[in-house]
Figure (cartoon, rainbow, N blue to C red):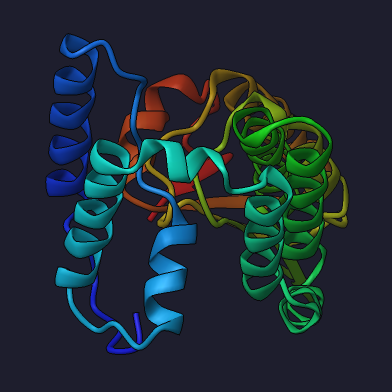
Amino acid sequence: DPKRRTTDKNRELLAQGTGNVVSGLLGGLPVTSVIVRSSANVDSGAESKLSTMLHGFWLLVSVALIPAVLNLIPLSALAAVLIATGYKLTKPKLFIERYKQGWSQFVPFVVTVMAILFTDLLEGIVIGLVVGFAFVIGRNFRTAITFAHEGDDCLLRARRNLYFMHKYELQQALERVPDGANLLIDLSSTNYVDLDNVDIINAFIKGAAFRDIRVLVRGDIADRTAPLINAPADEVRFI
């Protein structure tokens, strides 16, 4: 949209659902909105919803009045129109922009485009979603925990909720705490800690006294986690 307006997704969903119901009752095929028509309207200078309505109206009139003429249009000509429109939507500049945004944006984009070309639209989108989710899970797995160490003071901060897949990252961070250190476990940005991670914290706290490590836990979740941490009060303190 040249004017950067947003679409009411609920209204669009209601309209498409109603259209599919009516189409099915009349014996027609399922309908959906596609970017090709919208892109063609924008390229032609359209600026309002009237362009979409007129687009559909003229298609309806053509199908109703001159179906024989439409059948004379070569499929190769229609394919050429789709290819030209698709090129405008995925021109090389867009690939370069995605590449500059990082692999997490570039790889799902390229995989989705290639999957659509070699399969079909729905399968390509599903494949792209799976690849995108894989990057999201990988990013959450790698960046859930940060560790900082300066002198005898160590800070272990959980940047989001901790689940079973974060066990290894948590274990690796705790192993970096030197003997005689003051460790602050910051859970202020966390609303949930999986029991597997609590067990790792338990094991570390129980062994911390033998290594002269003082442990403090910060965050609202501390009150809910405290009963699960089986350690004497002199070994761990909540702040």
